[in-house]
Length: 121
Image 1 (cartoon, rainbow, N blue to C red):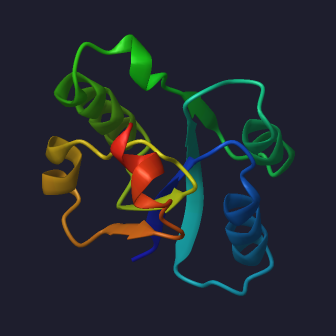
Image 2: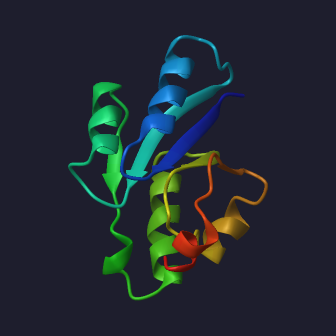
């Protein structure tokens, strides 16, 4: 079975781009990068995803009243794209508990930010 990965990106998207190119070049087998989720539109990360022809969805965490409702929006996207694994590639957003529960042992954090930065989100 081929895994369907979503990448939650930060501003630059360099790690997501690297993963996408490795998958496209056949260096990572059994997985596809099916979705990029960004907190803002018109960033280098969304441009990189568009160049790679990976669908981009923008979900601005600040527009949700709480983490649970933000998590519900993420889960709806994951269901729509049939996502089986999540890669955190620079996002500083804290992943909501409902997403953590649904994707237990299927979330990979490529490079966590310093504690001071991630506590604020």
